[in-house]
Image (cartoon, rainbow, N blue to C red; front, side):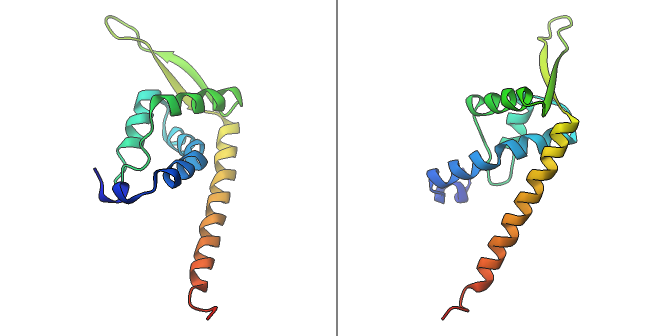
Length: 123
């Protein structure tokens, strides 16, 4: 297990993930269509491992994004012994939402950098 993950307060980690998971799913699907298991794997394979989520977390996000018109899905495969897989695609509405969320994320990063620059200046 990653040393950073071992040092992270689980409550803080959960809150951060809860706040950014939709954006990350949209980000991954903006690169290429994926099915749920691929998304779980890609989130798990990050250097810190902090983005690893369970199916019970990911699938409700996918369903909600699809219901909100941010994603569309369709079945792929199922020939021979292959099991059909539900593949998710980002929509134009989803791309617009991703852009909006990226702007918010960048504003948060700028605000954090600003607060960090104040350290030592208030003494």
